[in-house]
Amino acid sequence: MAASGITNPLAGHYPWTSFPLIISAPMRVMSGPALALAVSEAGGIGFIGPGIKPASILTDLSEAASLLSERGSAPLKLLAGDRGVLPVGIGFQLWNGDLASAKEAVEKFTPAAIWLFAPKDGQKDIDEWTEGLREATKGGVRFGCRGGGHGRTSDGAGLGTLVPEVKDTLKERGAGDIPLVAAGGIADGRGVAAALCLGASGVAMGTRFLCSNEARIKKGYQDAVLEAKDGGKNTVRTHLYNHLRGTFGWPEEKWAPRTIVNKSWEEHKQGVDFEQLKERHDQNVNEKGDKAWGMQDGRTATYAGSGVGLVRSVDPAGEIVEKAREEAKGILRSFQSAL
Ligand SMILES: Cc1cc2nc3c(=O)[nH]c(=O)nc-3n(C[C@H](O)[C@H](O)[C@H](O)COP(=O)(O)O)c2cc1C
Image 1 (cartoon, protein in one colour):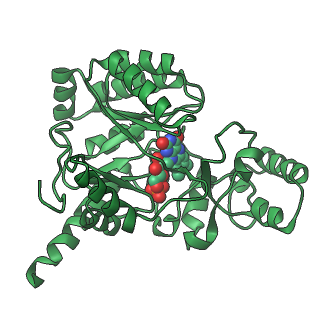
Image 2 (spheres, protein in one colour):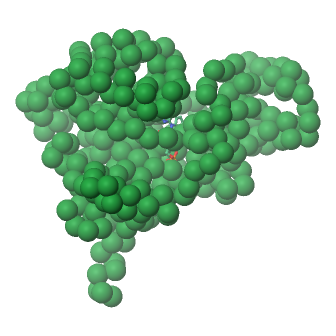
């Protein structure tokens, strides 16, 4: 592996992937089987996110397997047949997940990778899930874990320092060959090239894939992502929208979601009390359809990262992967003549 890490060291485990490695993140409900498979077909790794209920993962993996056999490419089908591995990953949220149903799904479909997120009890939970799932697959899948989406509530560093510092620390501890995947704010080839220069072996993108044709998402939500610019100013990390939607129980001192701001946030800042905000939110959602989203008049949760301003169109997921990959390669090549 080159000193900078600019290779695809994961290619041994994921032979269908191309350099630079692009992953679609497991976004709850929105990253379904069609999105995940389209990303893997384009040479990335597509992840299926947690569903509404823990058991949804069985349905989603079963659909991914059917899609692959119906209209998957010959090389991916061959690989799945050869290795008995489904060429997509799955993501679990540990704080409200159910290890027994996760094990059942993994045992039945052997997805190619597993992403463990948001433990309630830190490393202890991660160890328990890793052991449990490894048992179910006899070591056949790769594991990763990270904090994102619902990101760190009150701390956290940008990729510019985080990736090289983690890389240095791993090296100092004799684990320098562990590949790192960078995530957070990457939405096109410029972000991919930058992440590689910092020492990442690949990237995961979430927000960009909200605006893919295959995402399981309402049009109003996608329109709000397209509308939002300047994510530093127009997105915020807050528990407000989880509460308005009736979602409680997250380990809130550790994790909070980033969302595009709208009327609920503005009125919350002006001091309108929660009960009133909830009433207006529910009415808005029940009556306004796609207009429940939108910065001006929308009131409901529009979870998205601070890279929203880089998302300008809804495109097929495979094209998003290919375009970002080619753009990143073009940028890296453009430095060659000056060196
Ligand atoms: C709408 C949305 C839902 C998400 N849901 C999950 C999830 O269920 N599990 C998870 O590990 N990460 C989740 N994430 C975080 C993503 O996995 C990813 O780390 C993050 O989106 C990367 O940053 P980016 O959105 O700036 O590309 C979610 C992100 C978004 C935008």
